[in-house]
Amino acid sequence: MRWTLLSLTLLCAIAAADPKSHYMIHCMGCHLKDGSGLPPEVPAFDNKLGILAASGKGREYLVAVPGASQSPIDDADLAGVLNWILTMYADQPSYQPFLESEINHYRHKPIKNPARLRHELLGATN
Amino acid sequence: MKPDVLIQLADKWVTARTVKSARQLSRRHFLSRLGKLMVGIALVPVLPVARAAETRLQLPEIGDPQDCDYWRYCAVDGYLCSCCGGSESKCPPGAEPSPVTWIGTCENPADGKRYIISYNDCCGKGECGRCFCNRNEGDKPTYYPPKNNDINWCVGTKTNAYHCSTAVVVGVDES
Image (cartoon, rainbow over all chains, first blue to last red; front, top):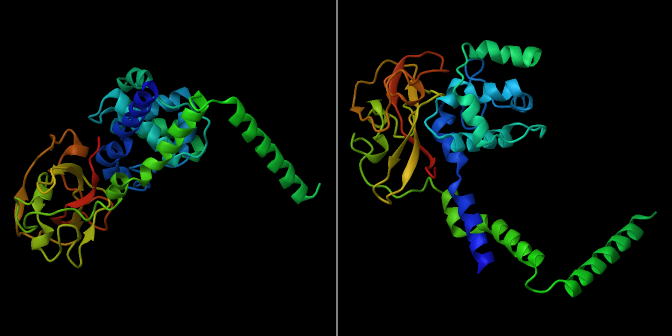
């Protein structure tokens, strides 16, 4: 019985967490279905995400950038959709998944100039 | 070492491990239950429920796509492409669909589910002028651009001239 309950709970958790719907509703309009975006105004989702997610400043940027921080979803869902995006589009696994607490920490620190900060963080690879 | 010798060695090793675990683990052991759980999770996408989600574009329909009350238009603001030589999901000839778009969700009265709708504008021609429809479910003020339907979404197209709006179902809202 205990195992049945545990299995059901796990399956329900998998079914309830749907970061793909959040991606489609809150991100896809500009970043497009395949993540290619519309550079330079809308950055493409590619392995630069992995570079950004591997540093503290880069992680702060990914959370605080307006499209993420201002999306009308709570911290847990934002962590879920960011991790989903990283899994889909970044191919180097040298980063840790975002936690809800980390989202809460970075989300309320507005970036004055996102494009400039992105350039500073990525340098020549931008 | 020859490859067939390697295969034989691997075969012996796997056989030995399997026999050993079968002797040592009871049917109620943690590992055997974990194995069942993992197989169960792997089978979930094979179930009819998951397959239905993949063929979601064949959805039950009620209503007239040339009517502003049609369910997909719950968040549209503009001329309906279905009255302008296109359809609810296709631009009229000579108009270019904007890749960047605003996304809303609408409930389909035929099955009670919420669907994710992409309101791609069709661009590159003058305003169509027919079937103006302004419904604003989920619309937010212009200071919140990603969720606002008043702004011109002809972005990333050859010209930003607005012609009409489509309402493309892109998925089921399971958020």
